[in-house]
Structure formats: C-alpha cells, structure tokens
Image (tube, rainbow, N blue to C red; front, side, top):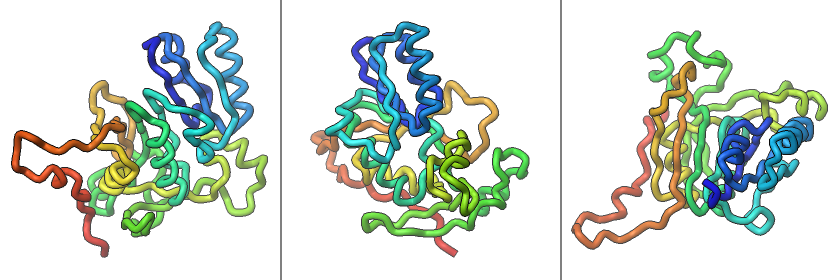
Amino acid sequence: MSQLRVLDLGALEGLYGLELALSGSEVVFVEGREAAAERIRFALEALALERAKVITQDVQDLTLREHGEFDVVLCIGLLYHLDAPGVFSLLERMHSVCRGLLVLDTHIALEDDELARFPHDVFWVDPRALSSVRSLVADGRTYRGRDYREHEPGSSVEQRLQATWASLDNETSFWPTKPSLLNALVAAGFTTVLECDVPPLVGLPPDRVTLVAVAGERVELKSSSIDAALAYEPIPEQAAT
C-alpha cells in the first residue's frame, strides 16, 4: 500500500482516499467545492497524514501534465453528475493519468423494460424524473443513456455550490447505459473491465454499478488462432425505438 499513488476524484469529504492514506498510500484529493476540500484538509492534519494533499479544482481540468500518473484512480459517486460531453471527456482524462486501476462506482441508465422489473421505491430517484433513453454521438461513436436534472434552471452559483450531492455547475447530467459505459471505457483506452459484486454494497438500487477498469495494453494472442480483436467488438445496445 505504501508504494501506491492514488487519485480520489470528486472526493467530497475524502472517505475513500483517507482510508487508503491511513494504509500508507500517497493520495491526491481533487474536490471542486472549497468547503468540502477544507474538511479533507482538517482530517489530514488531525490524522497527521503527510503523504496526502488536496486540490480544489473541477475534475474536468484533470491533466497528466499537472497531476502526474497514478496507480489507482477513484471515481466514486461522480461520473453520473456530469453532462454528456463531460462523461466521455473524464473517462479519457482518467485513462491518461492511470497506470493501473480505475475504480468506478456510478449510476447507469436502465432501459424501459429493465425499469419495469423493479418497483419504483427501490430507486433513490424516481426513474420517471429521467428522460427517455436517447442516443448520442461522441467521438464518432453512438452511445445511449438518460438525462437527469442536477440543478433548477436559473439557480445561482451559490445555490449550486451548496447542493453538495449534485453537479458542480452543469444543469443536467447524462447516465449512459451499462453497454455504453463499457464501450466508452474501452474507447478511452482501458483494456479490461470487471464488475464488483463482492463485497456487496447493501441498499444500492439496481441502476448502480461498481466497475474496476484496467489501464493495460492490448496483446496479440500467440497460442490461439482466434482473432484477439473479437473481444473488443462493441457491446450491443438494445435497439432504439
């Protein structure tokens, strides 16, 4: 653990990064709200964690040049607060600084027939408040997902900053479907994506997933005639209606 350099994006009050820092890792917290960043700084000082620092910054300003490389990137409860351009841009930015693992915990958009399998009271947000599943094109690729309102139109900067459990600025966010999220991770450069079911996160709704993406390199199979590229074919979506 002491050899790991960890990036905690959209850290809020730093729960996950602090745990890794207490285990000896070097941790960089990036948090867009100064009030939350100050709470992390207070915790670092109180716990005498000298191998950690806090940057008050929009996660969409993440760059390799400014922040360097990391063994582990944490993006927990963040991606679903970004709009459509921001989702795909952040995936690419995270890949650019990741030399090991990305831990991604996020909401996904369920198709209408998937939503019908669950009673509405199992969701943290009423699925009827989301837009219908729509398609969009990003970097020449087609993705599907739903829009979700983060802030009321016309809300002030102060009101948005005080909405701790919402986006930093954008009025709406975009939740890709699970196939679209997996395809976007591959498009960003991640070579392997695993879903974590154990240990279970009790109480989360069915439209929430925890994924671990590996920033590896594609290899050519030497022991098989099977085309290695087959594993990288886009995961099919449900047909648009």
